[in-house]
Length: 388
Image (cartoon, rainbow, N blue to C red; front, side, top):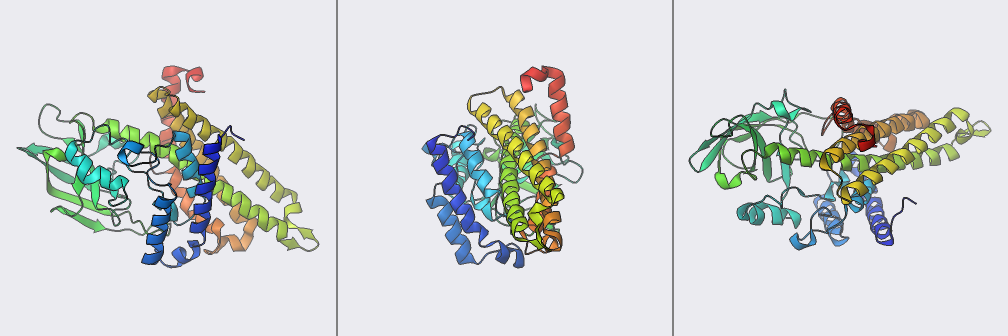
């Protein structure tokens, strides 16, 4: 099905088996603020590497797995079956970085990250600049051989786990003043501080603090690419992340369909099974149908990227993927809670956890409303036939 080749199916099966290993630990993570015991966490991270499920988006020459976009989707889809962000050990280092990293960045940051020895996070979003990153207030000023960075960043996902940060800010000096630029910054650099760490709806070990950058000095060698290219990296990152969010939503929806179907087939109400109730059948049928449609879309866009589709078309199609798959998974989670009834409101139940965790998929990396605006804009510029 879906035209997968033998090597794709083998990778998919490998990822599925590992996801099943992670699922065993979900309940413990839920009861311990998303954390697993250190020895368990290290063993699982090692297993992900051993099974060839990390750095799938990086070339073999740089130490990655050299997977196609479709194969990357297959791995992340299986990771999506797991709650509590336990599958984040299926690492995808910055795939946009190798083409623009200088020698210093490559040796100090990129290669160790691919090897699993370092971890990054992104400081881009601000209090009044979320889905629209073109309105950032953070600044970067050139002073001799250094840049001075200032600003307050919100939702800096994984800051507590990472050891370096990608900082996006508006240049205030030079020929490119007013343009955005991106920098790589060591997390322990003087002037970086956590303002506060808000509690979020999900229970995961990766925090999303508000982080202040006050007169943080970085060498000019830490500028990513050129002064006028900052937004291009963000756009490439968004395309990739939106597609992978779609993939993970497929895995979540599949797990939920399986779980509610199994429950409905064994839950008796009087002399009848819950699965025999037509309104329950309707929820299962709608969920399965939407999963089929979303999976077909995600795989098709992945194949298009592998074949070299125009990037502006890809940008719109990745927005379509994120929009449809994230909203699809949300609907499936809502139905799953309903099918499980009171059990579906218990944190020990997978439907309850997904009900909380999937809600953010409609927000981060561009809210659903932003995706609709992107799609409509590209429809106006390129016409229907170019996009679908």
